[in-house]
Length: 272
Image (cartoon, rainbow, N blue to C red):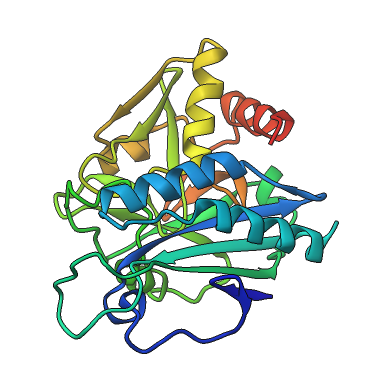
């Protein structure tokens, strides 16, 4: 199912700036058991992203109404819902006078099937050669420019490797190709800073809140590969996979520890 500006369609104009320049933002939402998980958090991040990019998106009420139609159509099925907002149609060239009406797209996809042991037994990761560009202006925003992630994900085809670890241009570990990363070191839950690169994930924010409320010390700071190798526990997360414990990154072995299991359980029990 695809809705473009509220109408069933599957094409956009060749002059749409989302197609021409990746000029827009998107959200990927898990829909399970009749519930769009963390919907308000996703919509808030969408609006914040539009504001950061100076996209005049004043159509949130239309978007909400269209989402309700989508929810009714998919009913109790599990699905992935992707919302995309572009700056809209414009003439050739980078300059935009922001008079264009933004394009809003809602698309649904089948829920991906991952091996059951990913949640309990953990996953294997690798380090990616492709880096993330340092850009304070774009850091944290889930914008449409995902070419770095595309290049990184296409570095491997081994089905035994579930995810790749990406670093910034300065060598600091930032995130996975599709996930945020956490480590446990000296009983402190650490996640990389995203002030220069990376995405401010919805599940990342939820995990920080869970840990803080539970008395677990959380630090957002620079993380090197050496520090990652010395961690007691590692896990990755996003809105679709939830939390995957990491049991191996190249030759380094990790255990599925108490804090990882606690975060998994607490996240599953949250009202979404």
